[in-house]
Length: 160
Image 1 (cartoon, rainbow, N blue to C red):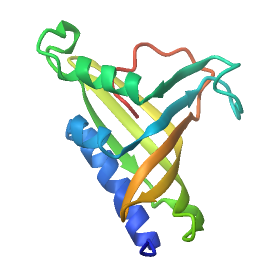
Image 2 (image 1 turned 180 degrees about the horizontal axis):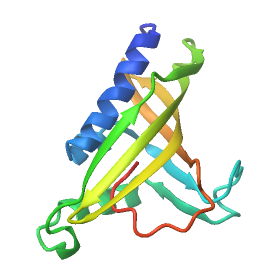
Image 3 (image 1 turned 120 degrees about the horizontal axis):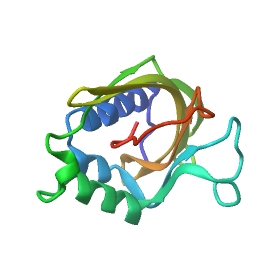
Image 4 (image 1 turned 45 degrees about the vertical axis):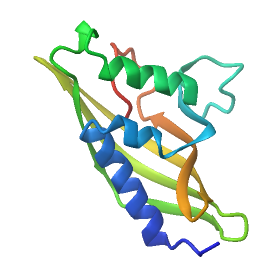
């Protein structure tokens, strides 16, 4: 197992948001471990995704369904397609365990999502739990904490 550097982790995170911004969803799904979860808590400092309501808590099966919908030719709510743009600060590397191949990062982001005349702006912190598998970095879990998580939101179509 090779030692992953801080720069490797930071490059991975930049490439992940680029995939989302460019609509390369199948490539993005390939970054995930089969038992991974994408979590967006509803409450500030929420600790449990199962016993407290969340905006989303999706496993790989649900993420695949979301991507199928976004890519679908008969998804009329996506004509024209929703587009997004992430602006990220330089990520912090909170934990590096080379022996286990486990890493935790923390990244502040602004996210813009637009479709037709509608545009939303979200500010959040993303926490990634990453693992090295066969020399590659994979997403074990991703948590997105919205700064204004207690606000009322319309539909968020894509994935911040």
